[in-house]
Length: 294
Image 1 (tube, rainbow, N blue to C red):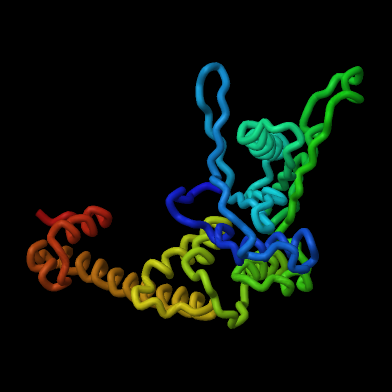
Image 2: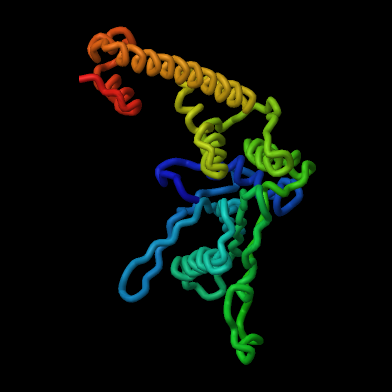
């Protein structure tokens, strides 16, 4: 997922959200994973080749434990656009985790746990149209086809979830899923007044995945921390839009006044005083109108 500072926690990094996503998408809402059974797995993994250390980075990864026994490692990858190399990427992420198990304990018969990766696709204008299996991506000679192992991508198209599936979510991810489903269905969004637990991270994910910076901007402008739900978010977006519209209207009126006064021979300094702006700004306006007064 692009546009994210690795020092910040993304929404799926919270155990309540992570377990909710896995339980809904893999187990139809049944509580198989519990938040307190999850431990963070470093999203960065390293492998060595050609004598050099290389880095692979997941969006989010967690290990599922029962007591002191690790049961599985689950990763989540966010995608805004279909990626033809997704099977290779997922296979690489999972392979690094399996290799880590080998390096951590060489004991014969040591219990090994599975690695599962969920790819969340947030595109709402079209379905995913790229390979979801390794064999679909490779150019395999017919002679080798029976001997090439396949690898499947567990893809979930968030915008194409059913309303029944969306309602199964209990965390803030319900708001995210509902937003993209509505954008796909009617290219509009009417929020439910559901309380948000992780306000900043929810707005940040919406901002990055929808490429709409207004969500992030609203949070940055909310110095008093009064945002409780998406209804509050849309209210603030509308208020900000109205303010910016008024400011732009006032600025346009000042530009028109400056041009008129310049044509009357009024000095730039006096125009700046009348418009309550700097002399440089007046010069820029007049340059645009090709009537600079010296």
